[in-house]
Image: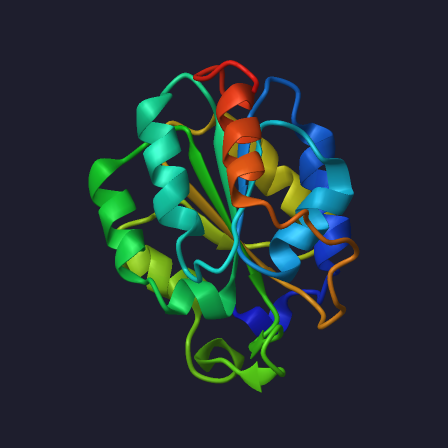
Amino acid sequence: MNTRNTKVMNRFDVTSRLIAKLKHDEAVIGGIGNTNFDLWAAGHRPQNFYMLGSMGLAFPIALGVALAQPGRRVFALEGDGSLLMQLGALSTIAALKPKNLTMIVMDNGVYQITGAQPTPAANVADIVAIAIGSGLANSAWAADEEDFERLVDDAMAATEPSLIAVRIDDKPGVGTTRRDPVQIRERFMHGLGVREPL
């Protein structure tokens, strides 16, 4: 599907729709900036990991979680600019084939946090075509909010990694995360059952 045929949606609304579907302590990795601000505001939970200052690493971190806990569904939320800085992660994920990993790309075509400079996704790069070309056959653009929810349901039942791309507007994040790296890490590890709370 060409991105011109997709509805421009709101990141907070889409993130809220995802969080509402989580029923089994699924892990969610929020990429830097507005992506994790909206994740925090949509439903703070100990299974959420909020990244700080690590552009492009939501998918690699989520891959590690998915491989370490194959019985747990793992979702990663990433912006188009961040993904474009770490495209090699897509082919690595395709090669390792974690069946429990779903990647969601919030594509507004700009580096929003740093001043709304356009990303290559604004004019020349198609995130889904890149993902499919990297070996992630189960990749699609969400046509609208209802289609996004359908794609999430399909991903939850999939036996291969999934990528969902969403065209979003340029509204700022709704909330803000507490910027304490140790607290974020410890809460997440406790939420995944690998460490006792402090």
